[in-house]
Length: 199
Image (cartoon, rainbow, N blue to C red; front, top):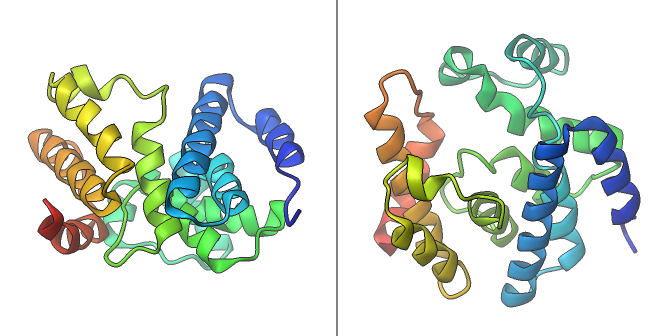
């Protein structure tokens, strides 16, 4: 095996709070299921899934400092909403602390929140898995009140991954636009501009 996933899980469980770790497990299992469906290496999906939120519990100040220390570019949107940096910081931590060197896995971690145009299959899988994993129930009530729409995205993930990405991006951007205190990253808008043709 390229990665000892059990060892990585054990290490991640000691770094994250229980709720965040359970979410990461959910993303890993969902990503593995999608990897089987779309015929990409299950081990890659597992590594990206369990590590995608490894920097999520860093404070905004810690994220800015970490990115500065490691020469990670910080966009204007990320300066205004530093929590967006957890994907970039997480990819760097996955490489330096967990031995993940494959760029496609690191990109899946890096872009799991914002998405981007022309994502690779593993990037799409982690992006979607983060949204639909079994522990994710809040979207059906707090965002739109439409449980059917959320269930439809879960179903779509296993039939048309590009359309699932587009549906998630549309829901997320609509939600962010409805709350003026929320920031929309330009990468997210570019991603939606690319994927909306699949709606």
